[in-house]
Image (cartoon, rainbow, N blue to C red; front, side, top):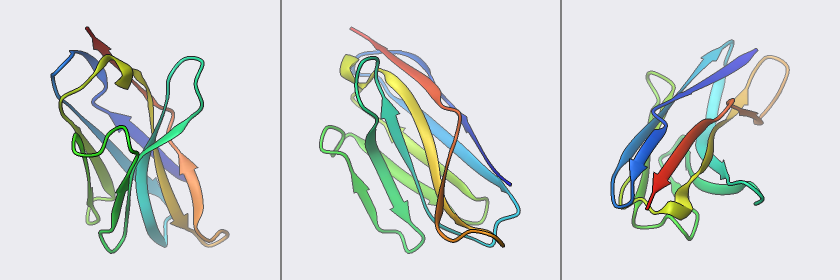
Length: 120
C-alpha cells in the first residue's frame, strides 16, 4: 500500500508564499511522477504542477511563473513552492504519485489534501 502525506498548507496574505511538501511511503518499486492538483469550492479539480522521474515538469496555466515543483527522489518527496499567491489560489491541494508496485503499474495515488487559503 502506498501512502502520501502532505504538509505545509495554511493561511497566507495575497502576495505571500507557501511551500507544500509531500512524502510517499509504502512498498514502492518505482515512482514515475509526482505532482499536485487542487480543488476550490464549486470547481473541478485541476492540475497545478507535475514532475516526472527524469525531471520534466509541467504546470497549470494559472500558476506558471509563480509556482515551482521539485522532487527529491532520494527521499520520495515532492515540494511545491508557491509565490505571489492570489485569493484565487485558495483550494485544497492534493499530492499525487504515479507508482509501480508489485501489483500495479503507473497507478496514480492521491494524498488526503491540505488546505491553502489566501486572504485578500
